[in-house]
Length: 469
Image (cartoon, rainbow, N blue to C red):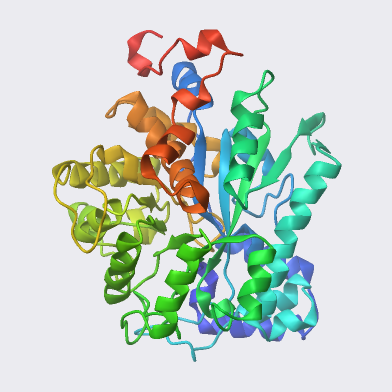
């Protein structure tokens, strides 16, 4: 998303002045700390709910951690995401996205508005090409994620700042085989590894490369790019943005991008798309029998219900239904523009609202080119936190069990398991290789995670905290 301090032109200019055009690590850390706040104070989770949560596949579709100087490290108090908190919260699967341009806000966001992203690259100490090129910033972030994965494999035992050691093993997911390998390592082997983390790479806006048939896009794909959003917070050569000044539809170049993503079996992210762009992309993806994803957003209907103005960032009920009818997944965000006051209650409220909307649409004939009639509402909702996006979020990864606990009050355990991670896994599997919705459900389903190596767990279904289990 990238809001917070990046929203103000004056502060961004001040940052530039203070750097003196040299890298400044303390300033970079201050900026990160100032932008990435956590709203909800920690509250205890019941032992029963924690136990249910720890048996789930938990996933999140959007974090901007790569944007910041320290990147993905074991512990980083200035951020919202680090490996220690990922492990503590049983977060198994995380999409890391590359934000490369963040023009300042006005009445609308134009690509010619002042862009502090180059200044951030400068004070981060990134190489000189990143100071002037969005593509160079994308390449740098992609390489940083690959290096983090390599470090975790070369030295999987990382020293904890508080003493002791913590096993962390990252798997870079670029194919269905990679996803299957990670699932087996974490859940299905004779000795399941709860410290094995699957990571994917996404691009927040196609302005990071010149053309879907060009060398810049090819280079990012070689570095592991597997999720692509046509646009970010401003209109570009590919599509209109929900916060842009024109907010038009997909361009010819954008249509080629969608078709190329389908051909390459990539995940297509419609977060930030204008309504005309969103509708056009849904049609293309539906006809191709390829799921659409909104990695992080809110729902205007829920914001209206709690009397919060969502601006242009939130999606309509119709857009949610269209996406589900492609077999896709909608990631509920954790920040104010997505859920109002950032709190666990409001995140859960937005999820339950989405379930309500999709339940009413169950069994209806697909529209807008969709190929999938909704059969179970909970199969099309996921978490899309926007961690480290220079926004205040409800909670960090360490406290994800709080969402599980409150969802279990309202939903069946298998529905909660869908929302907390199975849906994200399934849509990734479906996009990267399985293609078939039913096959992908089996690949990432609850039954697939219960193994003969753990017969007592396999035989015991998930149950509500009030069940006495």
